[in-house]
Length: 459
Image (cartoon, rainbow, N blue to C red):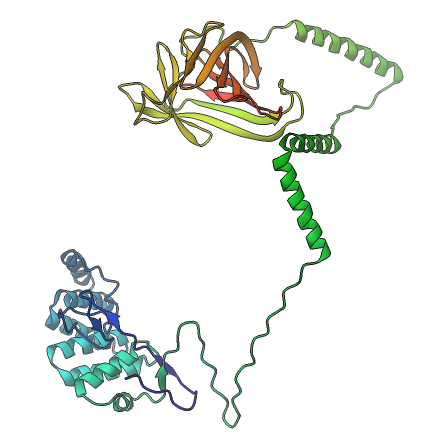
């Protein structure tokens, strides 16, 4: 039976008498040393046994034995070794070690508690009661005080109240449920009043401004889904206005020495600028892959890397205002299947696989179904006008042209991809001995997503 609470609230210790369940399914009380059904040692009464590893006791025993041999005067290592002896069923060896620990450190309450449990199991009732009382005296606020007191009740067969008085504990009440804090003890000679109920702050009611803002948000969301093209047009127009409004032009002007010198400098500057513009217009861009070493349009080697600048615009040439700029990386990770020549490539956080054969360059979505999921990306040889359809995707070689991107100028084949679903099409430019150079897709609302090569590393 659980003890009743005293009339006065001046309690110093809270007990915990919740039972537990053994591995065999039997209910075990906190003060029981072993299970009554399976005779298994319990960790409810003993301290620090739950942190010991029980599955490989031999390895654990050897480890703590070496620790004790290296430090024979360390009471903590002796305490751990005694716990291993207890788990292995060597109670006399455990009792001897716990006795040594209590002699080395008399104020070690956990050692007294475990020694009392071992002595109770060995039949030394007087020694067990003595050690339980010493544990209660050293650590009266421990949650295992009530377990030690109930163990004294079981050993001496006395009522719980007598065991409490024999242990020297005056004020002890059941532990309150978790989350509940007991009231503080009142001062002598004063009346105890319970705390006032907590006052809840009333929630602010909806106002006219809140309802108006909610209506605007809902209307904007509805307009975005009902009229997507017009909504994006408004968004692009607003982005262009903000870009032109907050664009700063920094100039570096030098003071003029004299009017004549300034006029001469201006004329010379105008002449030189005009000459430079004529030379720039007549100069042909340097094609970086003019003399390719291989016939591959996707050179695959571990560590090959292509960096791209990705942005959205309404100008297919890329000269208009840009929004949502980001960087995209394509990296060759490893040779996933050496027998078939399949390479694992990471592109923008996704993992894809590429296979290059004599008939063309293929993309593979999965290694488990490589032949059923291979989709043609570039037909070989990529002659202008050649077209092929594979897995619902049609690829057409439209032209061979010089493409200028931030990484330089390259001679590329322009490929046009379309799907069976209308409105899905995109273009890709591949350079021989370089790889992907440019990408452009057309959205249904007339916007373009462009990806341009900024740098690359080929091994």
